[in-house]
Image (cartoon, rainbow, N blue to C red; front, side, top):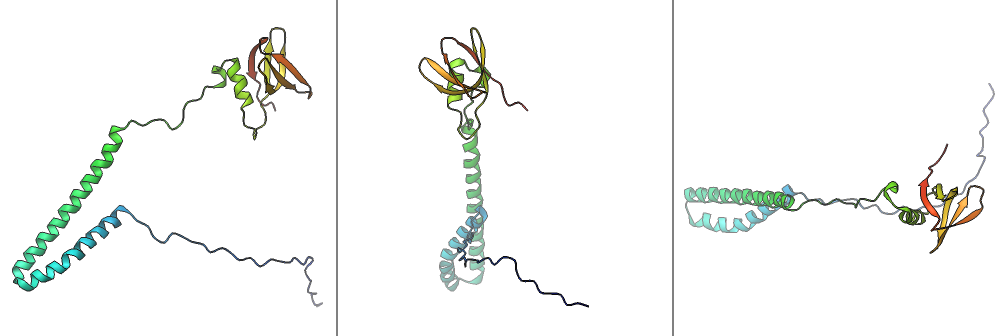
Length: 180
């Protein structure tokens, strides 16, 4: 059997040495439960030195009663804190009436002729222009709105010519839309 030839690479591409940036991911998080646990631990750590002093001075029966009382007090404080948070959170939603995030914009059909012209002039430049029919008393012109002056508008026709129409003779502006 014939030996296979080892093929050399067709292209020699020089690869740069990249230094990848150091990624920093989230290392700490917090939640209500974790915060409440932390607060209880802090209260217990503050109470511990006092408990040790009381334990040394009192007999065992009294120290057991004291620790039970302290545990009950801590539980009551925890429950009271939870109820206050629930009341304050639910109260905030009931008192304020929600307002819509966006103001309603008129549709093109609801606008009058001058508003339609303003809309077409302020149309985003990233989008293709909208073909329209500009109706005057004697004829209807199809094309794209190019500019608007105080007394007239310029319309670019489909054959790339530009025509001026006076605002006084303009009766209506209608969108044609994209045809396929």
